[in-house]
Image 1 (cartoon, rainbow, N blue to C red):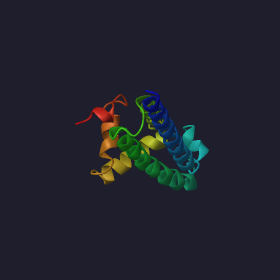
Image 2 (cartoon, helix red, strand yellow; image 1 turned 180 degrees about the vertical axis):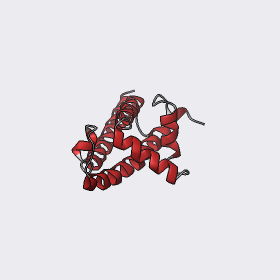
Image 3 (cartoon, helix red, strand yellow; image 1 turned 90 degrees about the vertical axis):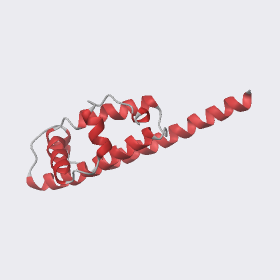
Length: 129
């Protein structure tokens, strides 16, 4: 019985470590998005390109997060936190603009992210068929 419990504890610790590494990746992406964009202000020209690149990377990152939940590599509560963050970020004006442009120009990518958005950030990819 102790061995099973110890295995469960080790599995949980591994997931926590893995989820923490994903959080670091998130912070690294957001370091490249201008502060003005993150508080919803109008950007000056050079900030727009920087924000656009960062938001595209964030969209790719979101798709990766969705895949990780879909394959059961992250816990449901972690997924719910990530999904809430996606909702908050994609309400910011520059995120709306960039994601709209990306979705129009590249209609066959980020399909998982599109689904999360369409389901109003209240879905669980692990339950998708």
